[in-house]
Image (cartoon, rainbow, N blue to C red; front, side, top):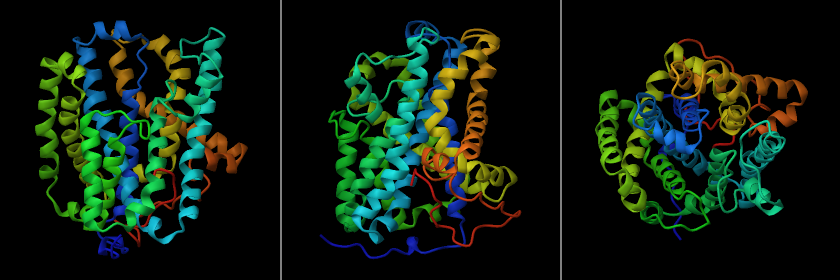
Length: 391
């Protein structure tokens, strides 16, 4: 097995400011994921009846073209960041860190979701899933055979941890063999083949894409590309996705491979567009503000569905369920509301116990608060990996 030489992209750089762009991208991606789980107040049958309404179309666009398209960049960032540390650390040391920053928060937040959400449902105060027995509860906590139906998004961490377990091997492969692994991951992702090693095979595909991007210095090169050129592929693929879902939705549901063949290109295009937007935001006031929020991004990823289960109905009681006049503004604002709730949760955890806050936030709330960058400034080491779990 050949060992890849240290690529120039692993060296610290000052321009472009990759570290800040990673922070911005993480926040934007996770805010987008909230749309996938936004509160509607309706069950599946009643939601299906609203699919062709204006609100149903708005919700579909936010879920398919914003929310689901955010996951690939998170996976690619994780692969991009893992390469150097996977080569330098011992295997046991590397996996131990990832178990603490990825696996432990996943398990703990699944337990919290089970206790709070299923607990309220058991007592009749909430319409939410309840495990049928102890074994099913353990399956939900570990995401062993399925995503936790209460905390669906967190199964990403389960697959990401398994990718991290293989990262030291991937990091030592030559470019040729790493591309071969990428090709196998692409075939698996596009085939629709179900194997319980990974619940979502595309996560491995995007993870390997990030590792390859680091070797080639792609993340830095994209900063020199015109913004419009990076947005164009997504703008071209999005209408194709809309058309396919509009006219062939029933057929695509029974032909998973065809659906994946449509989804994968648009997800890569979305990752490119989001990354270029993040780079463009770094020197701007909005970008500097988002970088300051990045320490809460992992916590937002882990706890937003618990907040939506518990708090969503209370707000929904005032504004109305999906289909009512005030629901669209509520839908659009749910990521920001979830972020605000997450910040309150994070600060409460820090006040009660900083070690607990660090554990539940994948290490981010245990670290010192980042200093706010002055206007126009970038970090001294643009490609340095910030502490955290999705890395």
